Image (cartoon, rainbow, N blue to C red; front, side):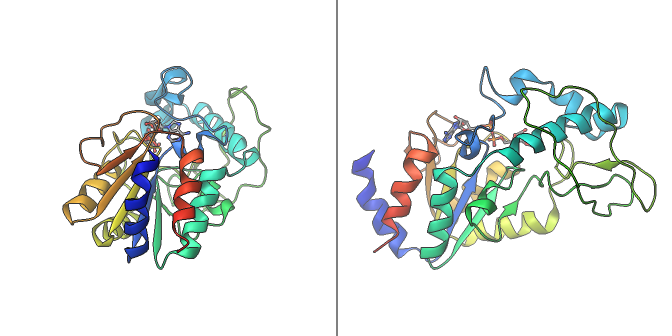
Length: 253
Ligand code: OAD
């Protein structure tokens, strides 16, 4: 891995616009489970069809709301890690750096990153299922190993319908303005780092492909092989928290 770094440094210092594209792996070292880890991943422990679709929410809103409130509690008690902090530092020292994340946590922002594009929504942005008005959370669940009991979602003060989590579920479209901004950044950048994502969920996973087609250098950071290996110019095998601080160090000329 270290032998890759001189060329990375050269490319980073020459880059006009860098994109950092992250997935669940960037928050793993903050104690937040990824989705597809074979034993600890959320989709190994829970059934996505029961929790992460509009139909699931309509069928059993208390089950779904409890699960997302449990996750919001875990995130509220977690802290940004070395990778989140390194990305925020890179944004300070490079001329232009756009952070695009699939994560629904706020750890990039809490590390100091600005204007983060959340392709899959955020847990903080609950809204009415019917009238779509935003709704402000007033409390957070204690950290727990799993949701303890069903929890009825609050009622919308305007129309009385259920408040729903502010995330994108399977079968739903990505927030259009966010997606357009992300696609614009991916097709405009000279370098894209894909960090901690299995690169399996589309359309988000298409962004590195779009960047590469437009001539950008694509660098992947992941301890495991992924679907992006065949496309990335470089795959740095390791944890984001180990590799990103070194990359951030290269930005200082
Ligand atoms: P996945 O769980 O699919 O992939 C996480 C990736 O992170 C894997 O490739 C791991 O090898 C890697 N990883 C684990 N620990 C790491 C570390 N410390 N440093 C770097 N990488 C590490 O998560 P995503 O790709 O984010 O969608 O999943 C994409 C989407 O699928 C999510 O946004 C979610 C899920 O269903 C929605 O909720 C809509």
